[in-house]
Length: 101
Image 1 (cartoon, helix red, strand yellow):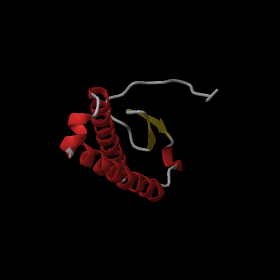
Image 2 (tube, rainbow, N blue to C red; image 1 turned 90 degrees about the horizontal axis):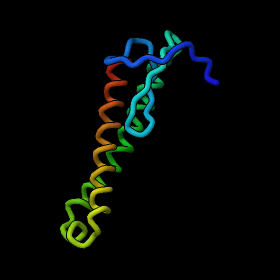
Image 3 (tube, rainbow, N blue to C red; image 1 turned 60 degrees about the vertical axis):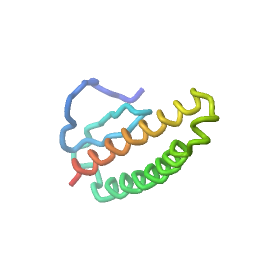
Image 4 (cartoon, rainbow, N blue to C red; image 1 turned 180 degrees about the vertical axis):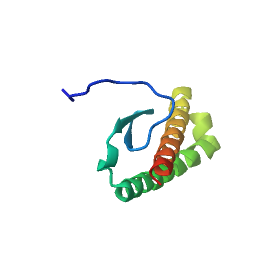
């Protein structure tokens, strides 16, 4: 459906790739010189700012002793997972920015 000739697992992305996240998994597609680096950096920075705001909200919840004590354990664990996932996404986005510079 996508017209791919191959799928490969690599340790490090090569230059000229566009990466994206599905959940917390990062994927990259080689696009050569078809990437507008400035636009992609701007999109990644915007997403990082959004995720940082999201993380602040979760951190406030987790720092609230009443929330942690009164909420069901699985709700607290879900909030911790959301925080961890956001941190992973920010790290991947920062790596993308660094690879485009």
